[in-house]
Length: 203
Image (cartoon, rainbow, N blue to C red; front, side):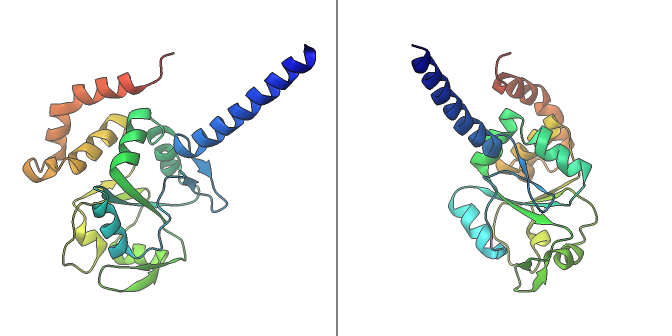
């Protein structure tokens, strides 16, 4: 009987390990060797941005290009507190193709006009001066820079409700009819707050 109990405990521990491992990648970020927080659903991009736009649109998603940096407390906040919020986490995974870049990184990035630069130089080309900076691309445009194709930019770490509001404003296309994000958010704040609260696990 004691052997059976120990066996069951061992099996249960293994199952919990698998579940915990999955959650660590899906619902909680991991800190990589590069000093950045990653989710396992971040797109494994070759940084051919025109291709990333095509892939996002083909899957009915918005391309989200997110600049982070090592040691950035606001990047950590977005990763550990905001993107881990159940409603936000689910909405991003279902509706956005997330490409993470390092503002000081050295990987080659190909812009929409074919210009190839390391991440840090591309950040300078785009005028990225702080992190996090998040660009949303909802459609293809005949422009040279990804920043010129962006439907919206999220400058810095918003609060959870505001972050969710921005995601909805972009994904639903509401930005085309109500160009003032703050007006859209004010009109939808109560609904967003209640939906986020309802998505949290019961305690």
